[in-house]
Amino acid sequence: MGDAVRVSGLTVVRGGHEVLRGLDFTLRSGEVTGLLGPSGCGKSTLMRTLVGVQAGVRGAVEVLGEPAGAATLRRRIGYQTQAVSVYDDLSVRENLRFFARVLGVGADRVEQVLETTGLVPQADAVVGALSGGQRSRASLAVALLGDPDLLVLDEPTVGLDPVLRQELWTTFHAIAARGAAVLVSSHVMDEAERCERLLLMREGLLIADGTPAAIKASAGARDIEGAFLALVRGGAA
Ligand SMILES: Nc1ncnc2c1ncn2[C@@H]1O[C@H](COP(=O)(O)OP(=O)(O)OP(=O)(O)O)[C@@H](O)[C@H]1O
Image (cartoon, rainbow, N blue to C red; front, top):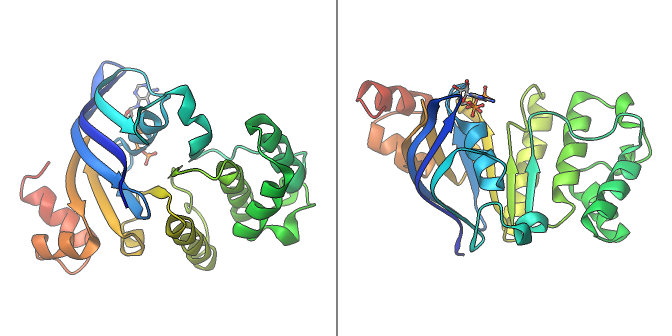
């Protein structure tokens, strides 16, 4: 499948500092790419840039063949931020019906995303009464409503128990298998092995880009955490 995202020479200035420094990479459709790096390295800023809401951007950022932020991309991109973005006093289904109307998609899509995110049993429960993991899945369901070709998920598994994390990763792979490019950020290196491809970041720089196996092999490390440390000690960033 082709490239969903092409980025070259991307630099972003926030608060007078270069928080992204000359990034070049592509994201392919049909793959789950993990965006990994310590807190503050620039993952959220990169995601905000791809969805077209970040100011202070220099360089070329092409998303689904258009410049990032183009109005035509709105329905084609799903974005889940770190904050839960559903209404506590509405049920899951009511939230989805509301956002479906905003996006102009049919009610049948609401039922589909309830299935995809495993929320059918909770569909009529108010969001305020759900667990953190269920609330997070409700946000994911909203991000899926437009049947996006690019799905951008900012730390969607943070704070979830291992069973829920496993279920969510299965969902991400199912979405990619239908042809979407899926970008998932995490500051937990052990999520790396679940991705087809990884972008490792540190201090605004991309220090590795490849499959988990290739990154481990080139760093001579047994796991991604070891590879990350080897890359940092080797002066990659
Ligand atoms: N609104 C802002 N104004 C100025 N600087 C900011 C702003 N938001 C973030 N930054 C800075 O930009 C850098 C990158 O932040 P960003 O949120 O992209 O990192 P992150 O890797 O997503 O971190 P985390 O994993 O903690 O969410 C940090 O140094 C941060 O302090």
